[in-house]
Image 1: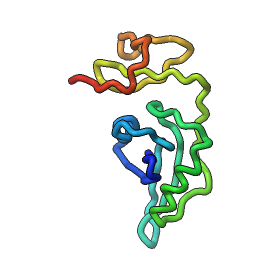
Image 2: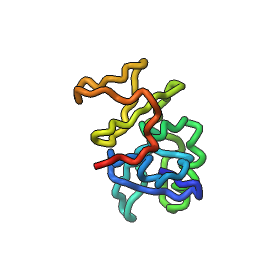
Image 3: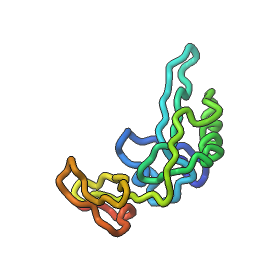
Image 4: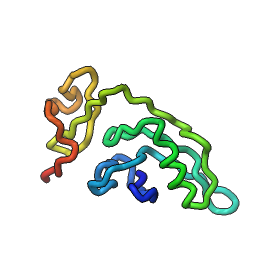
Length: 128
């Protein structure tokens, strides 16, 4: 996740970019992969797939600014770009706090046997 100050914030996969952002707007978000190299490491892959933030591919300048601050070689564009159709519908499942994309107004989750809220709830704090 890229913070408003263009700092790169990292969190474990599936922990959620909304949580990683700490309530701040995110100019960029997605997944990043690092590779070992002879001189340490470098950024190998970068994608904008984030169901919590749904960043457009136009967020690359914010991402590259954050990567440049690392001083490590990185790709010149998203290696795995995701194109989200708009409007993107995302809902947080209250029971587990995970965010889910809602396909075609289908607010039921087959694998969880539960319905997702019809109202926006991604920015709500999940209760244990």
